[in-house]
Image 1: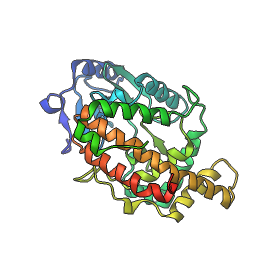
Image 2 (image 1 turned 30 degrees about the vertical axis):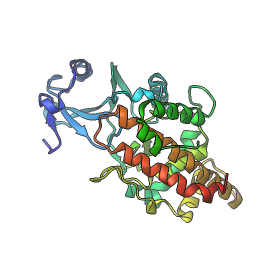
Image 3 (image 1 turned 180 degrees about the horizontal axis):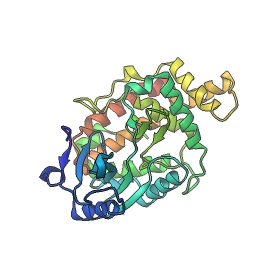
Image 4 (image 1 turned 45 degrees about the horizontal axis):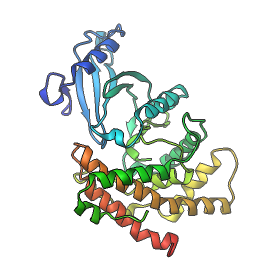
Length: 320
């Protein structure tokens, strides 16, 4: 048993009975599992909204253990999105060969297929080969006919989250955060095939392509697997050549080579949408501080996102 693996009876990682029963029902369908009740719970780090666990069962004849992933939704996070919409998106993506299979649901979470791939790290996003694969996968993702309302929801989401902030924040916090207004941990890569898989769709909805790419670029300033996961380092924001390379790969994934002018136009749009990204995730940080129990300095994270908004807005929008 590895250092992070805990038996289910360990009090710190004991799962609710409803979850254990759902897991046992799944394991009982597998003939090679020795005992459906003999499960091991391994907490996975890095999640900022949910609690995520790998579940393992020993199998007969020294074969590889059976594994699934359990996602327990964070308290109060339904304020951010419609959970049923997220599940519909999750199931749609699974049916089209994207992401893990949905194996089961329980009151405040779900059970997913465990993907035998590694979660990308912050440095992986800077690797030209991996970055190109992400760009191609993102283009494929954007080409899917997704379920749900066919309109951009970014601005409605910003207004709703701003209203939630006003309800939740203290007067002092409200003064501090007065407004005028794709992270790497959700990307996995198969080590053999190098196939890229996007695994989490909680915040997925119809939005401009440039906004999605802007989010991806902004995430390059983050590293959630350090002692200070809330600290952003904007010196790591991709340079112009790196952004152009990503966008050219993204646009050419459809089979047509984009002109330099087309790449530059998308680059300009992406840069402007970084402002929307900073506002969105700044508001997310304020709300999360009030509704989430996960050990993460959400308010400091929010402060940095708003600071970056004010620093870059004059350059991108002038006096607008």
